[in-house]
Each structure stands twice: as structure tokens, then as C-alpha cells.
Image (cartoon, rainbow, N blue to C red; front, side):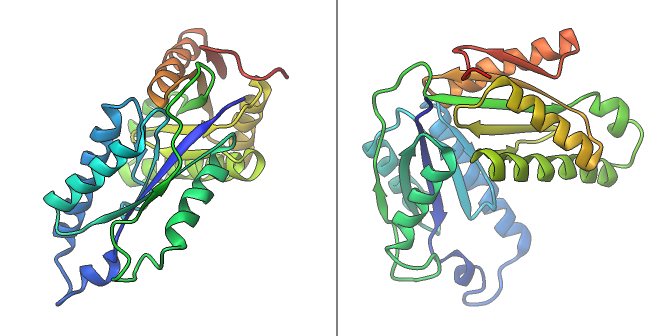
Length: 257
């Protein structure tokens, strides 16, 4: 069984701040968001976690093994370095979506994301003891994306094709399996999954082909942390590329078909 710790990092009162005392330059906002995400990703990455930007004012991280004190340190560091503060909610569940929902609820109970009196909430439960099967990560990419798209189409049309595949996969894995999927650049998608059988990943690949006519391949890994599981998934994806297969597993086995 998987046991996933999910952390939600939410900028406090960000919408009103962007237009107070008057609208701020868009590239200044983009720069701030990018730097903030880079700091959050680096912080959790050094602790074997994964972070994903989502909408930039909200960031989702897989943080198995990262305790409450570390989360407090991140929050304090952001408050000292940026003109904005963040609230952080954390929860644990065998299904990633359920963990995210619980983390969200912890912040929502304290007030709206645009409530200026709700600042620097830190609420959560933390999984400090981990096992080698806690996290299951699937790393997808598009088969021959360079040959089919990058070297054939303009960049915007290539981007559209990749985003269609991401949207199709993201909805399928969320609605059918309570997994959280994130576009991580290039033609790569990382999915944080509950216990799923090998055949489930094959079904996901077939769904995207039927839905948007984009062919994916996927490596799946297990580990005690996001880094361990993700690294195993990367190796499994390399096995796909070398063998020409659609799905390969690495690390602790997934549940049986």
C-alpha cells in the first residue's frame, strides 16, 4: 500500500497584492513566481521531495519524510526573502488526491486564500517514518516527440499537442485512480499514484492514444521518498526507450493485476 504525504504551499492574499496599490508589471509577477517556485522545489528537493508549480500561486509537493519543523523553516525563509507570505497545509493518505484534499481543507478552515487576515498558516500531519513502498511515481513521456513534433511543427503547435496529451492523461488518472499528474517540461509528465497494477498504466497509455492520438510510454517506480520512487521511474522509462515497450516497472513491485 502507498502512503503519500502531500504538501500544499499557497501564497497568502496574492490576487489583491498583485493589484495593490495598482496593477504590477506582469513580468515582475512572473519573475517572482518563478523564483519562489525554484526556492520551494530546491528546499524539498534537498529533502528528497518533489514539488510542482501547478498555478504558481499554489504549489503541490510530495514530502514523505519531511517533518513539521522543516515546513516551518521553509515558511519562515519565504517570509524573510519575499514581499509575500505563504500558508502550508500537509496531509497523509494512501490515495494522493485524498491527501491533497485534506491539506487544502486545513488551509480553507483558517479562511480564504484572499483573506488578508489569514497569513502563514502552518497545519498538518507528517509521515516521518517511511518504507520502501510508500510512494509510487509514474514518469510518462511522448514517444519520439522530437521527430514527430519538435522537428516538424512550430513550437506553439508542438506545445498544443503535448498539452493535449497531458490534459487527457491528467483527467484519466485523476478520475479513474485518484492520482495527481503534473507537466514537468519538454514532453514529460510525472504522476503521483496510489497502488496501481502494471495493466493500469497500459490502459492509461491506450486512453491517451484513443483520446488525442498521442503515443506515450511510462516508467513506474516505488520508493520511500519521491526522489527514490521518481529515480526508479526514470530508470524504468529508459528501459522503455531501449526496449521499445510502453510500460516498464522498477523498484518495489506494484500491486498484482
